[in-house]
Length: 334
Image 1 (cartoon, helix red, strand yellow):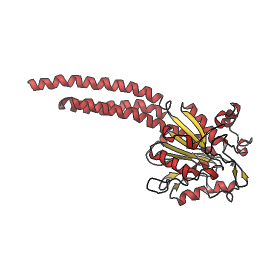
Image 2 (cartoon, helix red, strand yellow):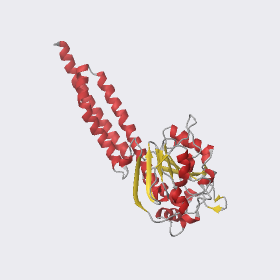
Image 3 (tube, helix red, strand yellow):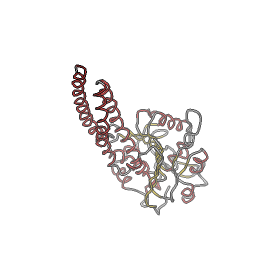
């Protein structure tokens, strides 16, 4: 009777302790999930090349401005850098009436400050950012396929960062290798500016190589849609967009992924803390608490993850590669 009484006494405080802990963590988790992206940082990497051979080019404005404002609107601190530093060269074609977007207009009206006097990629500590986003434009054909840029890609991905690229931004993957010397994109599912799109803009004879074909040659599984479709692909922490029309979608998917990671950091310590407290109780109390844990933890997870589910691309946050496509566009660019 004495032992049984001791177990019953110990059991009640353990159960109350679990409830208090869960309520406390749920409150903390809700607040942290609500502001999950607020403490996040994104680095947008742009080209510094204004010429591709005899072809005047640069960065495609929407591929910088769209993601820049998407990150900023999500409360993410965003920095723009370029390969060599200085003012970012913008492809004149991207600012014609046919292609200039509201994001481009907003940047111009604000004075284009983030595009001026940028620091060089080599001066940036990629490990201090949560998202490394490679913007496109044909200038990337000149200064993205290098060992230095490839090393940034490989190191960032290996350290658990989200690596994203839109359109020709995937030129950054051309020289990237894993720790064992394999091509970075080998066996990864990606999308990029397609060979068909390159032919339609008439630059297939001027680029150093056709990007889609190159990535396939390196072992990537390349998913493409009709030219000028808004298409993004996620494979783990790798997010890619097909063309300028995919710029914002690519950024938003990166944001959703970063938010999910922030939520997981809130929920996992909570689970561990509850399990730790439960093991301190006598076995009978622990067994009863364990029976109640699934429901309590499920409620906590639901509260935290609801913030992520508000994202229009929530269904894309999966362990397996996913593809999101919208209606085909009829315009061409680049």
